[in-house]
Structures are given as structure tokens and as C-alpha cells.
Amino acid sequence: MRKKSILIFVVLFVLAGCKVGSMADAGADLFTAATISNEELIQVSQEMRAQGDAEAKVAPAGNKYAKRLDRLIKKHRNEDGLSLNYKVYLTQDINANATADGSIRVYSGIMDMMTDQELLFILGHEIGHVKDGDSLDKIRTAYTASAARKGASALGGAAGALSDSVLGDLLETVLNAQFSQSQESDADAYGYAFMKKYGYDTKAAVSALKKLESLGASGGFLSSHPNSGERAKAVEAMIQADAKK
Image (tube, rainbow, N blue to C red; front, side, top):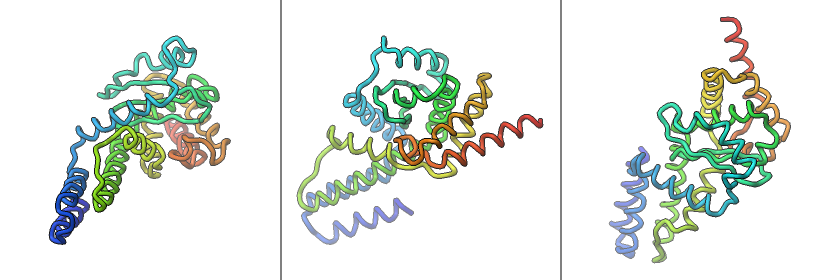
């Protein structure tokens, strides 16, 4: 239905005969946004993430945070058919996120408040968002909106490619967009299964979520991963169900 609506929008633009060159460019942008493949979106995600890394303060290899993360993810660079890459951002923000290309970024602020086992759940949760396609959904939605804004600008004769600033805006949009309740539940379930699979302490999943709940509505992670208290209860239910088996 979305693709059909965009196609109708493009046709109406052409029939209107307004600034044909610019409008044709705008229509092409909207059509591309609607029909772009997963592979192309992953490429956009890689470029977007590279731009974000260039602007962030990334922990170098010898940094204590980088060494800690490297120790935790040593056997999780290729997980569940995914090729993943990890970096630490040196900032006191409480955050962790993943993009469709398999880039997982952990902020030093959240590392300070989590034990190793709790961090492993956070990582498993983020891997779940990639595996389940949630991160891909985010970039598709954000890219389509970005193309639509470009199309609107083209009405005035302005158009351009995905510049560094556009990539930066796109990344901000992706990272600030909330996951749905079902996406969060599925990612938590994936993170819990991840903990079980490797013999990690599953109770750390609950304590991690309760720590996030204690922060209230603050923190970048909470803006895109809401309802930590309810999610902690759901994971506790998983633990109890497994104990009865």
C-alpha cells in the first residue's frame, strides 16, 4: 500500500507539470525510497554509521573500555549468521545501539553502571534487534522520510545526494526512533536466549533492566528502549518458567 501511494504521488507530480526537472528528481527519490532493497539499506547504514563514528569519540584499542568490550565480545563477532562490529563511545550518556549493518555501539556511561554479565545481556538484546530486522525497519522508515524531505526541497529547485550532514541527520533519526513494544519484547527474549546459550547469568538480564528503570525517563538508551520495569518483569517470568521445566 505504501509503494502504491508513493507511485500515485509521483504520477500526480508529473501530471501537474511543475518544474519538471526538479519534480522528476523528487519523484525518483521517493520511488527509490519505496523500492530500495535490504542490501542497499545496509550499505546506507554502513555509510551512516561511518559518519557517526567519525563524529564520536571512539575508544582506542588500548583504552580500558575498549579492552573490556573486546574481552566480552571475543566470541560474538560472528553471531547467529551475523557479521558484527563493536566500538565504545567515550561519553557518560547511558546508551547502546545497533544499526542494520551489524554495527553495535556501547557508550562508556552504560559500561560504568553495568557488570560484565549485565553488559552481555545488553549486547544480546542489541544483536536481537539486528537479527529480527528491527534495525532494518528503522533505517527504511528514516530513509523514506529523508527522501520525502529532499523531494519537498526539490519543489524549490534544491536537491542533493546523501551528504555527510544528511547521513548525520539520518543516524540521529534512526537512533532516536523508538522500537515497538513487540520489538522490545522479542529483543529481550533474544537477549535472554543468548545468555542461556552461552551459560551466562540470566538473572543479570533482570538486574540490567532494573538499573535502567532506576534512571527514570533520562538516558539515550531509554528514549529508544522504553518500559524497562515491565521488561524486567517479563524476563523474570522467563526465568521462572525455565526453572519449572
